[in-house]
Image (cartoon, rainbow, N blue to C red):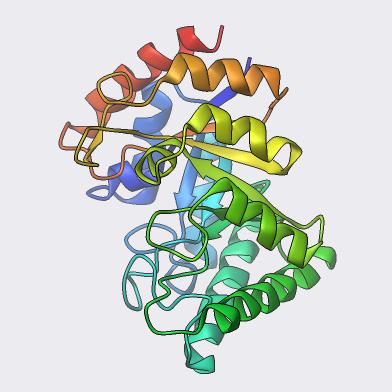
Length: 274
């Protein structure tokens, strides 16, 4: 059986330490820390804040499943600055944010840090975009090799450079470094026209973290079990692939109160994993 966590993104109205308490009371074993405001934006989380967070995690017996370095709303928005900006200064901001998130992940004992699939491609040549992303990933991999960052995981996402499992495998082959792997979000898979269960099997050992997100027919995030994702098929694929990493529930954007949604999600998902 796998271990369940939940993203702090569902608890944006709470301080991060308060979110930890809510997550523990909902019955989870871990929490994913989003490295952005209002929670884990690294420049805003000083030593005393990190000490307080570690103490609360220990008190609640929660682990950190992953540090999500995807959104950068503290600077701009959910995907920008991206890895593939035409402006190298903006690309450097994305790289530095990821390094800072990786340092936070080490501080919190998280096994991985995740990022977006490159970025929007509307303002950059496709060949340049791939080169920029590859070079940025290699920079993070070098830091990870020096124990300054945990492995970095790429999450395919609709409307970005890396949107499918095949896109992810191609960039992983280009980077060719064990410090870089893949993450999936089941809701993103569905929105990109892919079967999440098939994506699990296609990525195989490259898959190191899973976001469990459900969506309805217009892409709205809903509580798992009430949308379109076939979670029994996803769990069957995870078992076939012998995946033994974290399963992080992603409720970011749901209209249901996070405590209620968190409990309902776990009640639905845990039996599927048995």
